[in-house]
Amino acid sequence: MKIANISNILGLALTGALLFGCKADGDNQGLEYAPQMYHSVAYEPLTQITEESEGAWLSTREDGKGEFYNSNIYNPHNMNMREPVANTVPRNQQGYLPYRLKAFELEKAGETVMNPVALNDEVLKEGKVLYEQYCNACHGSKGEGDGLAGQVIGGVANLTGGAYVDLPEGHIYHVITKGKGRMGAHGSQITPENRWKIVHYVKQEIQGGQGAQGTVAAAEVTEVETPAN
Image (cartoon, rainbow, N blue to C red):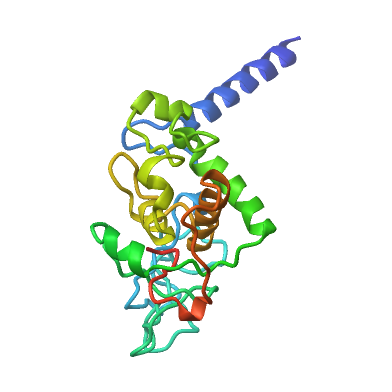
């Protein structure tokens, strides 16, 4: 009986110690599970620490190297990053060039930016899904500016009437990318190709094909962008 009581007391004490050890307060970080998830190795872009034992006294790394060792052995010149090739312009996988127009250059976008995505049933189907994900909340399922969020904030464009019907595709793409008025920029949320699919859906399904323009090959487009912009 005494042995059982002692075991219970020791068990409670151990449990309490474990719970107390997990407590984080002030300078005490508590116990950490998988510390590499909390303390990732920092890589300096233009320098490397090549001594594998550097920071060994602090290290919890699974590879046994020091905490401060952060070298990418595949890159030359003691750099962790590689500089872009001189006199080159980045393109994405679709061959799009960086988008150079600023937010205020809306009129220029309407005149010069053309849709590089070929129009077909599959594109319209994907455009509908994207529209429902990103646009429906404000513009509504039919583009009349009566989405649930649109009803709250007010002033949402009715894409089915007035001058909105005749807007060039480049204009719509630019507004999706850079934002305008109450609408925030979505360039960081939606890839360029998906933005163009939304444009197709708006022009063909929401606006019934009014004011739609032809598509051009991606290599011929002078004003398109990468997902980074």
